[in-house]
Structures are given as C-alpha cells and as structure tokens.
Figure (cartoon, rainbow, N blue to C red):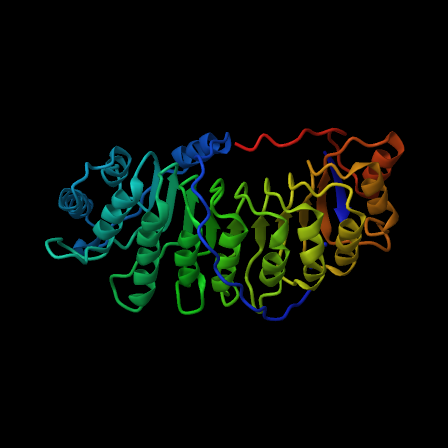
Length: 377
C-alpha cells in the first residue's frame, strides 16, 4: 500500500431517499475483525459506579432480565447474564452469540424496566451496546431502536439512559431495520448516539443506506458511521452524496469498505466530497472502482478543494497504472500547490515502478506495491 500526503469544505441540505423493498435473506457474514473486536472489549472491560438509586442495581437488572425471558418463553442468554453479573455495574453490553429478536426484546425491556411486574427504573449506566452474530432481524433491531428512542424521550428525567456507541455486526440487519434506526437518527430522535457500526450486514444494501440517509439528513450529532461489507452497490452514489451534503452534519468518519460502489457511485458523490466541511476519514477500499478515469478525475477535483479530510483509503480497487498516473498528473498531491491537508492516502495496486515512485515522492510513506482482491467474509 502506498501512503501519500494530501485534505474537506461546506454543504447544503439534501433531499432524502425513499426506503425500498426488503431484499431476500442472505447468509451470515464472518470475518477476522470480529475477534479483534472481542479482544478490544476484553481489554476495555470496566464498569461504572452505581448511583444511590435502585435504578442501577445489578441485582435488580438481573432479576428484570430473568422475568422478561421467562415471560417471553426463552432461556436467558449466557453472554448477557455474564455482562449483568460482572464485578461492577456494567456500562456496556458486548455479546457474541445468538440472541435473536425475542432475546433482544427481553434485554431492552429489562434495561428500560417499564413493563408490569418489573422493579426499579431504567438502567442508567449503559453507554455502549456491541452485538455480534446475534441474528436480530427486523424485530430485534426494532427493539434496540425502541430503547434509543425511549431514552431520548426521557432525557430530561432523572432515570434516562444515554447510548453513545451502537455496534450490530453481522446481526442480520435488514432494510426495514435500517428504517427503525433512521427514526433514531433523525432530528428529535436520539442526540446521544455518536457511533453507529453496522458492518457485515449484507441485507442492508443500497436500499438500507437510503433508509439510514433519511434520518441522517437531519442528524447533527453522529460522528462515526461504518457500513463495511454491506452489499452497497453502484446505485448508492446519490445516497452518499446526500450524506456528504447534510447541513450541519457532525459526521467525521465514514467507512464503506468492502462494498460494490464502483466508479459509477464514486462519480455520483465525488463532487459532494469537495463541498463537505466536516469529514476527516473516508474508507472506500475494496469497492471495485477500477481504472474509471471520469470517477478518478472527479475525485481529484474534489480533493483539490477539500480542506478537512485527513485520511482517504482507496486500496484494493485495481485502478491500474493509468488510474495511478491520473492521480499523479492531477497535481492534487503536489506538496506545494496540491492538497496540503490530507495526511494519509492509501492505494494498493500493481504499478509500474516509476508511477509507484512518483506517488511515493508525492507524499512519502511506505508499503507494498501490490494488493489482492477482497475476501469478503
């Protein structure tokens, strides 16, 4: 991979897209990132100190979870039980197991403590939810969305919950599920959420991205959005464009790695990147962009005027020698007259030595000249 130096600017409010039909169900995804996520959570651990009220009592939460599981006719999830019964009151839920839609509902209701027969109040210490391979489906995501919406409605009350980090990786999130999350993201939904990670949900597709964009077009608090390996295709250009042009957006990191955007989608949103004044990191690696001269030229033009982007990943897109030469000839990586804000630009192609060296001289850095096509899951 070659690392080159180089930078983002303003925007106007977009028109929001419609949610399209639910795509057919596909197989679960599996990836090496899951283990690294688990290792990270194992290191992070940590609980929070409970308040004097019964709202944050672990025993109360455990009892409520047991009651809800029994009421819904399911067994308690061992991962959830382990989190609840940790050494300190948990501030995060991290579960890598088959929770299912009913299991998700049981957990949510236990946290909110709003059903008849449950004791105490909403559990207030939770800030992070990380679920992996949990097969949530439409109803499971609806339950999570209900939790986030309910906490916002009660934000002025003493027993509120602020979830700032939500990760649903390889959880069978559907287009309809993205619609539920869109309600959370829209203005008047939930202002606490700053990170949303939906990686490896291959039912999302472009339709799911459009659904999310409906909420994001009025969102001013989300900072990080990750939709890696979600089968987003060449028709997504308009949706990404709308996302980049959202007025007052706080989005700083956008990860679209491992999709199928192609040059067509890149061409559709490249100009918007030049007008964006907030994004700092954009990952377009492994997206079948290829040596699309028109798309790469549009990207170069955007980078010439962009003043905030710090990192752009374009590796594993097979842009070839012609595409690489276009990058160097555009002047965007010229140290004196080019983009001086972009600190990291990563390409991974088989290049002629002089072209590769030209890119390296443009920005410094090191790495391999070659790369291989994605192994998606």
